Amino acid sequence: MTDQPRQSATGESAPQKRWGETSRRNFAATCAATTGMAMVHSSAAAAQDQRELRLALVGCGGRGRGALEDTLSINENVKVVALADLYQKNCDAARKLVGRKYSDKMDVADDRMYSGLDGYKSILDDHTVDVVMFATSPGFRPPYVLEAVQAGKHVFAEKPTCIDAAGYRKNVEAHDLAVKSNTAIVTGTQYRRQTNYVAAVNRIHEGAIGDIISAQARYCTGQIWYRDRAEGMSDTEYQLFNWMHHVWLSGDHIAEQAVHNIDTINWIMGGPPEQAYGVGGRHQRSETSELWDSFGIDYVYPGDRVCSFMCRQLGKTAYDNSNMIYGSEGRMLIGSINKPAIQYNRSGEEVWRSEGKISLAYQQEHKDLIDSIRAGQPIVELKQTAASSLTAVMGRVAAYTGENVTWDFLTTESKLDLFPESLQWDGAMEAAPVAVPGKTQLI
Ligand SMILES: NC(=O)c1ccc[n+]([C@@H]2O[C@H](COP(=O)([O-])OP(=O)(O)OC[C@H]3O[C@@H](n4cnc5c(N)ncnc54)[C@H](O)[C@@H]3O)[C@@H](O)[C@H]2O)c1
Image (cartoon, rainbow, N blue to C red; front, side):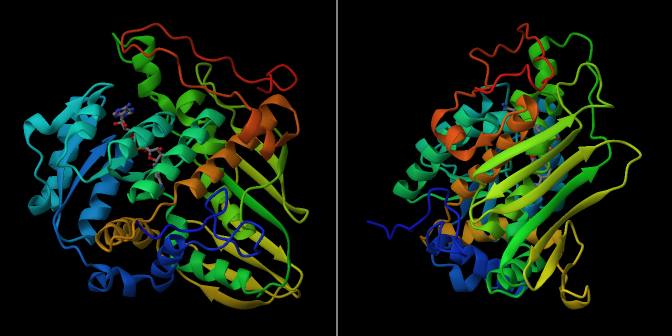
């Protein structure tokens, strides 16, 4: 019998008690992140079981290859033994590109590369694989992660981990099962492990800016990629290929990209908001994209604290990707990527600052995953990322429908399930209509 962590409903650690106590597993991860590089290089502290761990990747695109490099660069005695992707050429590219840098840690035989929609199943059936990393388009994350946990695998899951209410429920099921089975689930919310983020959030929780009054979060950038249809592609294949622009696969950019900021605000507030109300629309998207390009959401957190959130993907507009937390005694600015966290007093004077590097945070999540497995205390953090992913869905649904949407409704009543009932590689598949507030239904 393992020592089970005590967690809130969302798995969130709790600065204000309302959301439950800090779990031992989350605490271990936070400590690791707080100490940054020192912890990165002190594997001996956590390592008890030094047996080689065998890794596999499902989704060999840009981030999948990045995640392979992150784990191989920071972990010893690990080996990548299997790859899966819709396309064989993406498996080939991952093996070649990552193998060039980490030849001693890549041992993927030709018959351990799997293509097509069912390729991941061969990895789950492989009893020699310990850890499966998922970096497909997000729509596949809830069923794949749940099946991986059911197969007894340790998991690394990229964000967002769900893009609808049905997916959230699968995430919760996977989390609970992993806790019971003593297997790990670490997620790609790297800012939770970035030293300046951890330092700033700790200061906020210790009261450095007084009581939290409100927050402002922005993920405003230029246009995202769009992939043209190649000759011979079926509707289904094309949607899978150009996945960013289909809501059942990406969740729209509020979930796909801006979930990072939403996750940071949830972390600071101690859990997800109670309700969301929002606006948005599109100005520059391609006709065949289902996405909006602008969202503005007011999230109301417990304690009547409001986060004014916006995200935008519009060319030739001002970039702002940051989080600002307003307290009774000052404010904290937490910049994204490699920007510093800066604390200001009520007169607007800088009183504290901390720098951090995102590349180290990307490595740290994989270090924490492997260390926790070796120490026999696997981190299970899916619920907190599921909550942040569902918070993004809550904002999207509020804006799409024009309704006031509550957390209770989404978690208990909503029937929102965007995953197609049948998915045939060569099948016909219509794009979903672009949402229109007042017309799009809240389900
Ligand atoms: N944490 C971060 O900062 C960060 C950064 C970039 C991307 N990501 C996340 O990583 C994920 C992938 O993003 P990307 O930029 O690598 O996209 P990508 O399009 O470059 O790669 C996705 C890959 O998954 C494959 N794929 C899709 N469905 C599959 C399936 N059912 N089975 C097997 N393979 C499948 C595709 O063929 C493709 O090669 C997304 O969830 C994204 O949000 C996270």
